Length: 150
Image (cartoon, rainbow, N blue to C red; front, side, top):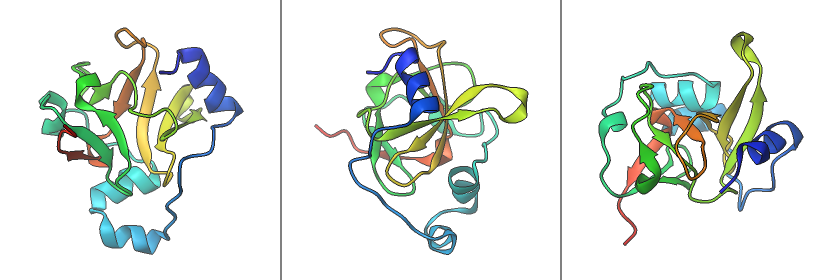
């Protein structure tokens, strides 16, 4: 699990190499993604808050990148943040989420992307619960729910 200081270090200093890479053209992504998922993941869009029932669902399982299928988050680390987007305390594997400084809209934030395919996921903030104190605020359309691995 990363600390906020480590997240900032990666966001402005660089991320480690991902375990593998998936690269496709925009045309190829459009063929496999819904228009909403393409807008969010490939064009760095944001879905409307509270637009997905995923925010209030807490069944066991894992959440994978909708683009490449890389497992990113576990439901056991999901919590109700009240923000309108699914929120997690940390990723399953620190190497599968990449961090980038984001100075858009007059704010300084940390964008999260899938390290494997560069899909925009959302942002991470230092106002989450313990043990990490982090809140990964993720667009639901960027995620695909998978079954519990056990």
